[in-house]
Length: 102
Image 1 (cartoon, one colour):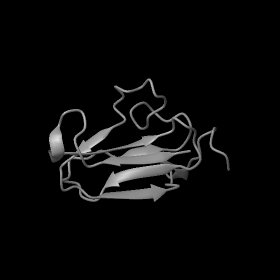
Image 2 (cartoon, rainbow, N blue to C red):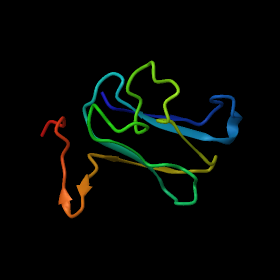
Image 3 (cartoon, helix red, strand yellow):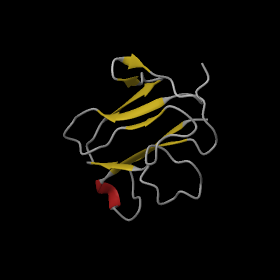
């Protein structure tokens, strides 16, 4: 199951002054998902997963990937948006990765 995780507390010793989020496919994949900052000035990264095998840094792949760059950290007042089934484009063409069930 694709999971979106948010943490507004003390994580990795940063205290309460940061917000963290990530996508996880550790327990499987069932829906493409994207988390994005509501404001370009929030200091956040966009995280997107389209398949069970996302690019490095876009999602947790296993419990052993604890040092993965999959976790995004943001300003404490950041707001987020979540899109289920985001459209993936390559140039002007819609694209569906090979391992996504249609």
